[in-house]
Every structure is written in structure tokens, then in C-alpha cells.
Length: 298
Image 1 (cartoon, helix red, strand yellow):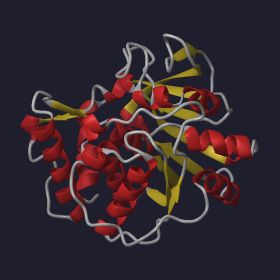
Image 2 (cartoon, rainbow, N blue to C red):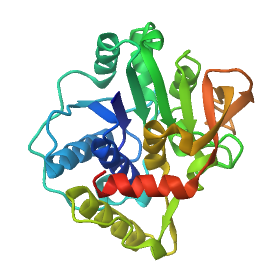
Image 3 (cartoon, rainbow, N blue to C red):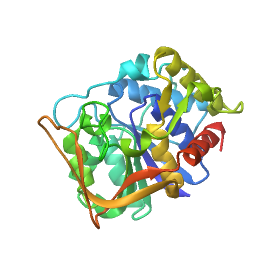
Image 4 (cartoon, one colour):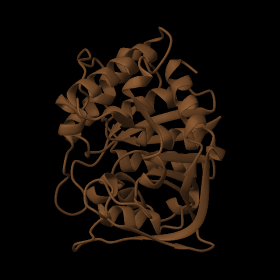
């Protein structure tokens, strides 16, 4: 099993991705670190707690991270993800986040598991950038980051140039992508090709807690956006890449991020022998099958 920390801003697609990871026999989820993004940090942290409590998950601690990006403030996406960033009601959490800040937990876990730890990043990269600033040796300790973010050779989804996660903290993204950590970048180039549609209903088979909750989330999403016929599996595809990397095709590159100006948040790739694997193609059918299989219970 691969030891992973999941850095997340739940968010409906984060919730689906988290359930996949928790159900995967290939991933050992050591903890969740929360960040603002899809919703405020208060909401993303509460959503993570509510999710694990609802599923009865024990032994996966949650660490609260950055409420703001390195510059300015996060632009939330409640219009996409619904009330409180989740769109479905779950009981109030009975558990609480750990006292250690998210970036410090990342440093401690990476130090304890040098060369064995993978970070799957599903939101803005603020927590990881803060961890790198706290401990520069982190770049040597982390085996890999799998980042859902970026739009290299396709248009963005926030601006013509920028994808949501990168746009929300371009300086942090630039720090992480140029840190020397081996990184798999799963961006809009591939995530826009992996989707569930209304015609796929009920989407996930079975009566496990994760299958039932996945159907609730997807039903809420399609009802709230009646003109949207597709639900793109952005964060689930990043987890799928961590579980089964050969679902995607990659090109090695170096990647820089435009920090400001009219192209703020743009990810610029120079294809070469770099440490970034940019996902450029995906077996969408196989990816969708893996995603729904893990949501059904693995």
C-alpha cells in the first residue's frame, strides 16, 4: 500500500475522491489536510469531519490548513458545489481536527516516512508550499505529489488561461511545481475527458455507505445545475492516477505558473526531461470504471 496524505478542499468532487481513496486497497490514507478553495476553510474542514464521521472511518486524522492563499483571498465555488460546499446534508461532526497545523503535519509525516510518502493534492497548493517553506528538505523526503490542477494545452475553467485550483494560489503552485518534488500533474487536459452524465444514472451500483452517498452527491449536483449534462471527475481522476497511473499518458516537463497579470494562474509547460509528468491523455472508459468501482466499495 502506498502511504498518502490527501490535501483537500471538500467540495463535491473532493468528497467522491476521498471515498475512492478510503476504499482503495492500494492506498494507506495517513491523514487529510484541509485548505480553503471550493469553500471557506471552516466549511472544507467541517465537510471532511462530517464525511469521515458519516462513514464511520476511524484512524484517519484531519489537520486544518490554510484559510487564505499566500496572497489575497480564495475565490470560493459555492455556485458549483452547493450550500456549505457539499450540497447534501450530513450530521454535524462529533470529531474535531487535530491541533497540529496541516503544513506541520506534512513535514512530520514526510520526515517519518522519507521516500515513501505521496501527497495527493485536490485543492490549492497553499499547505504544501507552506510546508516547503518551513522545511526545505521536504522536497527530498516526499516520493511524489499527484496534483489535480492546471490547464496546459486547453482553456482554463476560471479564466481563458487558468484552472480553479492553480488560480486560487498561483505563488504556492509555482513553489510546489518547481520544488524538485517529482509530480504528476492531472489537469483539465485530461479531467475534462472523464465525466459522468445524467444518462449514467444511478452512476454507482450497490448499497455501501460510499455508494449511497456518491449517488446523493451526484443527484444533488445534477438537480442544482439543470442545464449541465456532465459532471467532470476532476479530483476523482487524480486519485485514480495515484491508484493506477497507467490510466493516463504523460509527457515529462518543467512547469511554471504565471503569478499575476492577465494570465494569472496559467500553467506553462516546457516539454523536456523535467520532474513533472503532465497528463496529456486518458483512457476515459477505464478511468470511469475504476472510479465507480472504488465508490461502490472497492
